[in-house]
Image (cartoon, rainbow over all chains, first blue to last red; front, side, top):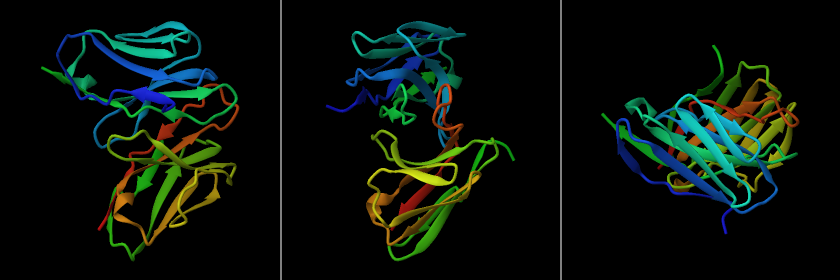
Length: 111
Length: 115
């Protein structure tokens, strides 16, 4: 079983839709959970970072972590064409700086 | 210049060529990384340098040779590559082990095509 599973999509939604992106993981030692956003022809950039189970909001973005199910989600409310990008989940253990990435989900928001 | 800068952005090389990718970070970070990004695959960590010392080599073939002369510069020397090595090579930096989030700051990548 791969350490981090993420559906690569592609996912296409109309403008204004609520988007749900998900990852599952197998290593219960993972403690830090991140979402990176990668625009076409650019490097990934950190979008959201969470440490514990629960929700974290930042504007239209909500990151959710369920450690008991080993499941993380990123919700995008009122999606915009500018949200079109690849979203990568990244997870790491407590003391280990190494990140384990999902494959990334390609999202297109159509005007 | 700010952030992490990678050159060249695009590179086409034959299997017998020797070329190098360059990365420079202007963030004052202590750690630098090389990642390989291929279609439909997760980002693959290749090498990690912390304070110029290599701390990780993720079973990368010897045709990839990293060099880190100082904490701001990182090179990836390429020789006798295979077509399956065609990918986007991303350089990243971070404050290093022990930092709060371990956030990686990526460059825009070097798109490599091996003919």
